[in-house]
View 1 (tube, helix red, strand yellow):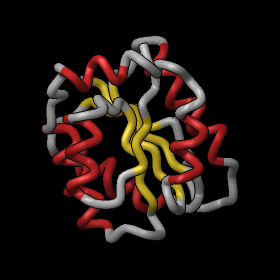
View 2 (cartoon, rainbow, N blue to C red):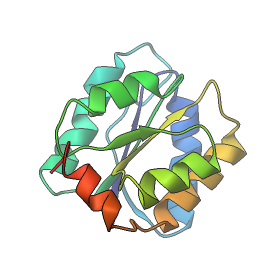
View 3 (tube, rainbow, N blue to C red):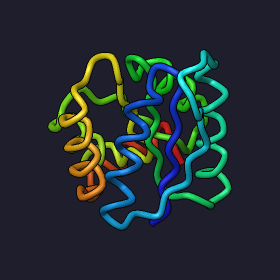
View 4 (cartoon, one colour):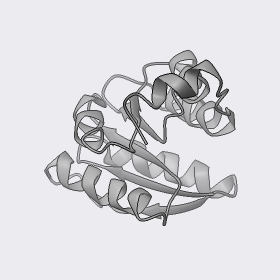
Length: 142
């Protein structure tokens, strides 16, 4: 599975750490920026990541900004994107199991790095349970 990762300046350092963890654990990743702590606009990087998922070049994504809120708002503009701004391991698991989230949004200024890495691990290992949850998702997403 190919994973796209992106961040704004507030999430840059966490992105680099998560990217390293993904690489060490054998995940195929595409980094679409940002590439420094210089101030940038998060919607630009959310759009870059989302475009790779919409084109089928990546199946899942991880977006990081200061709180995760901006990235999730920007990514969720697209009908087939289900970007979940998660705050702990439980919400990360549920975003996959019940909502089939294809993008995990993280807040670098509100999460400890170890927690964020554990959230990524659980999120990637959790499968969508389907059933009644699929019927609900079809009401708002492709």
